[in-house]
Length: 376
Ligand SMILES: Cc1ncc(COP(=O)(O)O)c(C=O)c1O
Image 1 (spheres, rainbow, N blue to C red):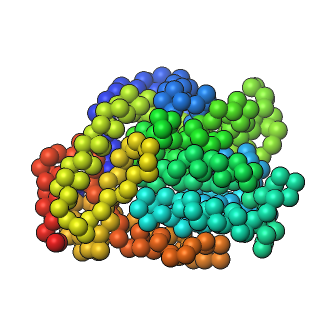
Image 2: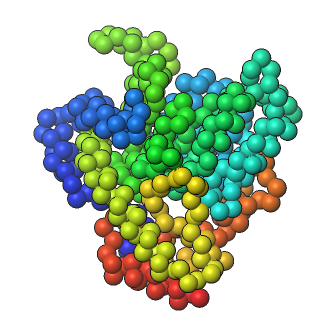
């Protein structure tokens, strides 16, 4: 099987993990956790980074730090991986799912603006949803596939309506908008190191922020809110959400290779773009102006989605459909879905992601291209 986006462990992973095993520093404290955090903060251009057990827990902690409650409504796009919305539901809050742009597959900012202007009002500089009387403290944009929306416009909208931004930038390590790294626009941003991501620690995540107080609190909350270095004194309800040293050791080795991985992903994406350039029924994700993407997961949109998915997977070339839109999942059918044309559904029905591991061979790429082209 040619994997969709498999882990590439060709660097110092074994060396650093062996160091953990030999020294016994395998658990939640150790030099690699700190080093991984420092490397990430430097790469993302933020002052602080706090390593977590995964991207989902990173998002959960961000929402806890914003004191989100069951009386709140959080804004998020309708096309995302379920973890974004789950993290909101862990807080008991409701979600206003906004439909996505048909070309960039990101939160549609025209719709967001309309929602904010027609459905919300300010009371004492706090944004409220008029119909449900719920407070709207947070917008969670999701940088789907390493693309982003117009971040200047999003930030301006959020500021105007007194809403904070927490970026689900889990897929966007190595993506930039106007030269600024994903995750560094909002009050907090998050990364995931799940097995298929551009770098992986098996499972892991990160919170990035420029706010010292929030970074300290994030670290505190992810380590059971232990407030005394020696005694088991805890000053609030905490979480066991810290990344372990043995995973962070992999993270350090992966960060060393990240620039190379980004180059390779770009090459792979360009290969597919060339291979399919003459097929009118294949479109690639349109990049928002000023976005330099990480090209993490080349994904095409075509009316032949189902048959191509079948042909590729039958040939041992792993390819995947897009996520079922959040408003269609049974747990979220009663959440608000703000849309005019339900473009999420079209994106869902047409998109599929192509094999793109950083170690994929030219022959395998040719095989994928041939299998796709056979359907036209
Ligand atoms: C958009 C999005 N949000 C959140 C997550 C959650 O990250 P994790 O799997 O590390 O919990 C992922 C990745 O899996 C994701 O793709």
